[in-house]
Image 1: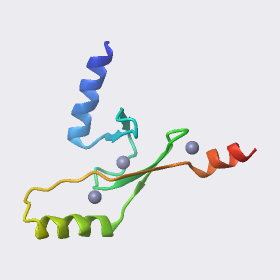
Image 2: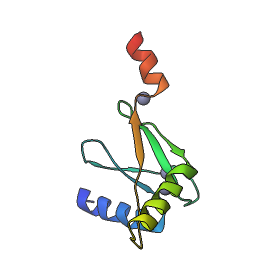
Image 3: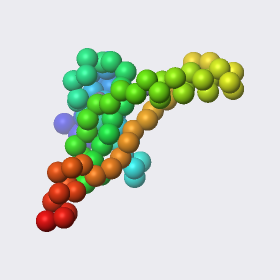
Length: 95
Ligand SMILES: [Zn+2]
Ligand SMILES: [Zn+2]
Ligand SMILES: [Zn+2]
């Protein structure tokens, strides 16, 4: 199977909500399955090992709605990911 085929299949899964699509800080497409039941959520991702955790912040959702109302935009969508260095990796770097 070619890489392009794998990517296409993953993109289908993203549409069905089985896999998360995460864009790395370098703009690379990363795929993660975090098993969050297709519920809307965001991620905090380690820049070193790539470990990602699902996070939910009502504030983010409210902010999006407020912005949509304020600027009169409809059918808004958003993506919000946090990148950082996880506890394990930061411990490692400190030795
Ligand atoms: Zn997820
Ligand atoms: Zn890490
Ligand atoms: Zn959200």
